[in-house]
Image (cartoon, rainbow, N blue to C red; front, side, top):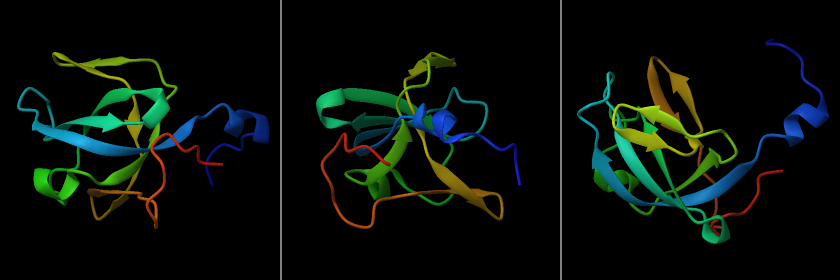
Length: 111
């Protein structure tokens, strides 16, 4: 098990549901990645870079709902400014997305 955190620590992480509305290749990235444009409803549109090219095509990702951390500071990746962190897990070296089981409103908080 990793480092133990308190419930208060966990409540600082703002996890939200968003829908991927655009997907672009990201040839400048060091590792293969996509540039994602994600609609978080009332939180607005945010950009993210995601290394998920082995399991997902751009078409697979379009209109897919995802879970992301939306309260990290922005991070410059090559010439792209990432504004959130899409949540995934690793299986045999590949990243797969954690997605809601049913469609929910964009911007819905994960509790």
